[in-house]
Length: 421
Image (cartoon, rainbow, N blue to C red; front, side):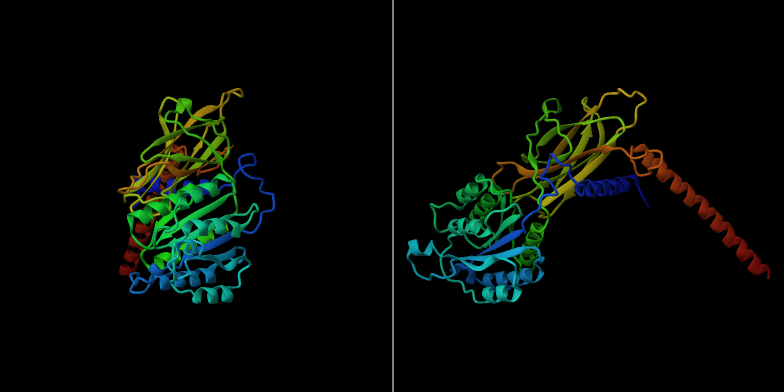
């Protein structure tokens, strides 16, 4: 049975997908006609002595990492240039100064020869120190410049052992250079200090941190990050939402980024003229450990606070992001000089931080706004007002009811004829 709640949920999910997949007009993003360099990924693997520990599905951390790398190498999209860098793979001694220089490029970033890459990984044995900071600096150099997507994926089972070159400061330095590089981190041990450091590294560049404790989970996550790198680069515009609509920035069609504190509300304004349709979607990334049971809501409101339409999404497990979206068609007006309507977009989240997790800066948020000419509302049965949607549902129910009556009458007539004969 289709209930109004189920219909509303289905509509919100459909609209979120439509809004998230729309092209973003020029002016808000990079020119889509500009040729882009090949996407690049540098996988940075901790090969320190602690990777010998056998606590991942009955095998060693090193074995789990090798298996993940082999699977990723096999499934890497052809257009992605992949490289592999190690830290702690070569120096087994106790000299700290030497150990903290132990990072090497195992396989250069470039067109992928899958057999060579897997052969290189097969030779690795857990050996030395954990120079995360130096490895990140070198990895940024491995990826070079260009206008394509660039990503570092760091896999480690322990904190950096080479401070004062703090890896968090290294990540901030990379981000401050404006080189458009994202660092994602994966921790192989559920340790609070490690989680804090890897979360800090990731959030500095807008990346994600994930704690993984199983082989399959590790393989899936690294594959997901490599696949994401193949997506075309779209440069978002940074905005600063406010706590009230009256003081919110006015957005035109485009892709925007902001940060939202835990359980915070952020407002943005959009001008919608009669006959136009507002399409909007939002994605909030949980780039650090959060408690289960959370959600994201986007509402379109009038300037007086009356809700026009909303989209919402909830979850109960660890995901990289929660997304939702909405559509609002502004009715045509007989007055050719009718003013645009100011629509207040409110974004709210119900994430809560896990114990000991930093709450600042806020969670990364990506907002898509598109204001387009509305459809022919007399012919478009999907242009939810939302009243028009309920008329459609009522019509379908009536047709189904009448069809059922006719079919039942025909069935009884056929049975009566059969018994007579």
